[in-house]
Amino acid sequence: MLSRLSPRSALLAVLATFVLASPVAAGDFRSDTTVTVGPDETVDDDLYIGAGTVSIAGTVNGDATIGGGTVTMTGTIEGSLNVGGGTVDVLGDVTGAVRVSGGTVRVVGSVGRDVVLFGGTATIEPGAEIGGDVAGATGSLTAAGTVHGDLLVGTGSMILAGTVDGEVDAAVGDLVVESGAVVGGDVTYTSENEARIEPGAEIGGSVERREPADATGMMLPENPIVRYIGVLLGMLLLGWSMLFIRPRLVVGSAEVLRTGPLPSLGLGAAGCLGQFVVLIVLVTIGALLTALAGSIGAAFFATAFVVLLAIVLLFFLAAVPVAMTIGRLVLPGNRSCYLAYLAGAAILAVILVAGGFVPVLGEFLSLLVGILGLGAVILYAWRTRHEPYALVPPPPTDPAVVAPPA
Image (cartoon, rainbow, N blue to C red; front, side, top):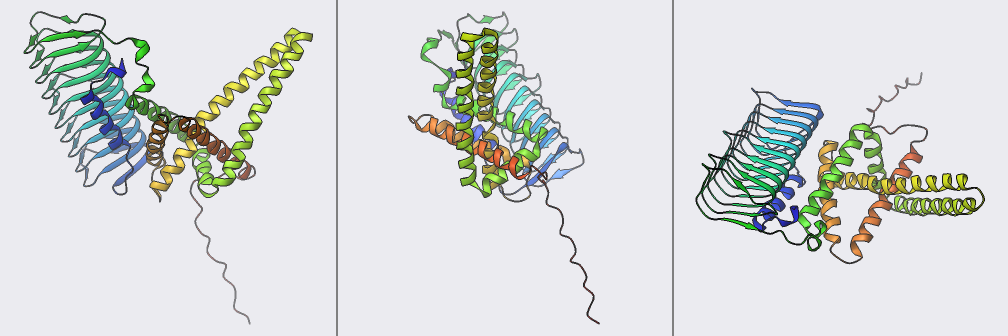
């Protein structure tokens, strides 16, 4: 379903993700478990936040870029709002665009320009007013507010209960146009099911249903936008979770990789080879023992399966220190680890997705990332086997005062 997004929706999505994830050089950076911009606070700069819980009740005279678990915006953004989070509530006013990726997204206030949504459940509440288009991909979408542009989405189910001044172009499983809904232009939807248009709904143009293309001819990975979003969100989920659980491991292994890329490469290659050697040995022993004692052989096969799962998991996790290393290179200094990882993950996702469209290059890049990340983790574990890594270097001690000679 997502791979049938219209070209305009796809273009807005590309712009949204690159703006959301682009590295930054200046602004107001904040990072903590909970970050709050109070109702009496005014931020006269671009605002960048990485936190578990974020609340913005004040005014931001610039763009706001936020990564968090729960994000609530009740204030005013005199720029654009870019958010990646679990639950995102845009209750205040945004003069620019809103670009959101989250599990649950609500837009209640006014937005001066476009709204781009990627999430599980998205709702444009009654009273919300969108100055431009609404585009994106969601599991479900309820549009009950006012959209002065077009509605261009791919979604599992959509309820249209508000006003769309332009046209509606959707790839959707189920479409309901409720009584009282108003569409100024055409309603074009791609679906296996007929839309339910209730009496009292006003549609200024035509209504056209298109049959979806054969599913075998539209595999999801062929859509670079959707693939990029998937890779980026997966890396953010892994990386931010690891930063929350084991920050020393992520930051320390990234520093190890930055200062020693060649040792990391060598150890990573040895580690990968060692894992597969162990796997082959376990399978071989299991096959031999199965002929002699079935239960013991089955135990070795089960162990080999666990090792295989561990190898796959390690290759996924190995991308985290690589992304953090890239983030630290493009955002040097004492910046938020969450923001640095966001920048690094965005760049690494672009490299991996772009490389995937070149034969052999994509597999090589993925393998290289896995080897580098694994080697960095091994080298970090070896160097910190006696003393833990310090996230913040200790302050310099005062030099000892030496008494003058008598």
